[in-house]
Amino acid sequence: MKQHGRVNVRSFVEPMFTENGYVVSLSGGDAWIIDPGFAPQPDQIAAYLDSQHLRPLAIVLTHCHVDHIAGVTPLRARYPDVPLWCPRNEQHMLDDPIANLSAAMMMSITAPPAERLIAPGDTLTLGDTSWAVLDVSGHSPGGLAFHCADCSVVFTGDSLFFGSIGRYDFPGSNRDRLLRNIVENLFALPDATAMYSGHGPPSTIGFEKRHNVTLRRELIS
Image 1 (cartoon, rainbow, N blue to C red):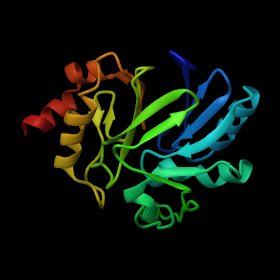
Image 2: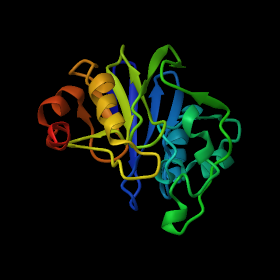
Image 3: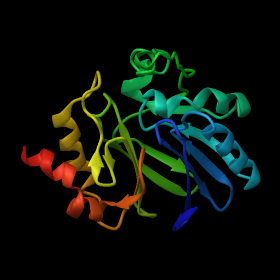
C-alpha cells in the first residue's frame, strides 16, 4: 500500500492481462474500487476491503475494455449496493462484448448498467478529497483519468504507462486524440504527481515527461 497524503492506494495485478485494479481509501474507511479485472482480482480486492474494514462507495472505471470491467459483476454480487460509475461515452460498452473487446477474445464479458455516468470536467468526491475528471480518450473512445490535486495522485487508465502509452489500434481508438490528451491534460499536471496506470508499475508525471521514449517517438513521427 502506498500513502499519498490522506489517500491510500493498494494495487492488485491480475495474471492474464497484467491489469492493475486498485482500491483507493481514506483513513476513515471510505474507499473506491477502480477498474476491477479478471479473477483472482475481485476476490483479492474483496478480501482486502474486508480485512481493512473499508467501505466501498463506488466502482469507478477509467474505461470499459474487458480487462477493466471483468471484475464488476462478481464484486457487485458481493457488494450489491455499491454503484458503478463509468465514462459517459462508453456506457454502451458495458453490455456489448464486441465493443468491450471480449468477443474478439472468444469471451462474452458484460457488466451491469452504470448508476452514474462521468465525463471530463466533472468533479468526484471521496470523503474529503476532490478528484478532477480528465479526458484521456484515444486508447478507447471515452477514456478518463482521475486526479486529486491535494494528494498529488492521478489514475491514468490505459492512456499513459511507465515508459509507454496505450494502444490505438482498437475500434474507437484515435492516435492523435490520445497523444493530444496526454500532452495537454496529463502533462499539465505537476511533475511530482504520482501516476497509477492500467498496466505496469507506478510512475510520476515528471518522470514520464523526461523519459517516456515511446511517447517521444510517437510525437515526432
